[in-house]
Amino acid sequence: MQLNAINAPARSFHRGQVYNPPTIEEKSQEAQQDYSVQLAKPFDVESVEFRIDGQVKEYQGKWIARVVAYVDARTIQDRLDDVLGTDTWAFSVQMVPGASYATIGTLTIGGIAKSDCGEDETVKGAVSDALKRAAVMWGIGRYLYRLPNLFAECEKRGNSWQIKKDELVKLRSKLPQ
Image (cartoon, rainbow, N blue to C red; front, side, top):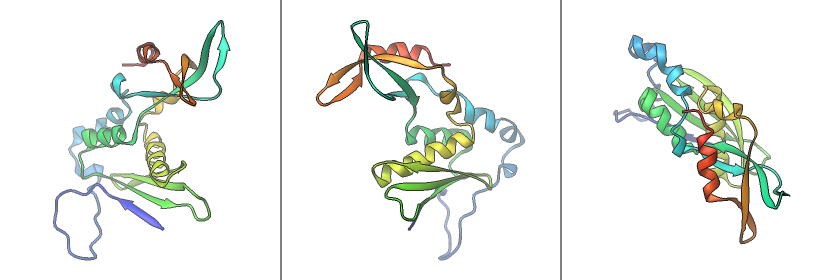
């Protein structure tokens, strides 16, 4: 099964015609020089989320866990649109045969394709994961993987652990701007 999500411009196409986004070379000289730098810029700190990565452990009377920073797929799409416009990038995804919710996502920018896998408990989650991972291949959000180990105080809500809300301000203050 193959799913395609192509960010196509508002153009008319004949039945059966394949959309080929303009190449980066067709963009202005200035855009050619700085699109990779613009893609790799840190996100606004409010766009960055955090999740618990591993076990929550008691330390000096507080419940502490290692946390990792991430952005959602919409943030990636917004970055691509803001830097490149809506007509020079495309994303396609293929389901991995025999795997429940595993995908291979390909992000094509100006005719160059880079791919990575995605995995989750749902198809939607696997597709989003593949987009985010393929975007990292282009430098988008890669800096988040280079952050030092981050730890935050957590609290139990229902049956799951959550990062305390006041900890998010502290975590965001450690992000590059």
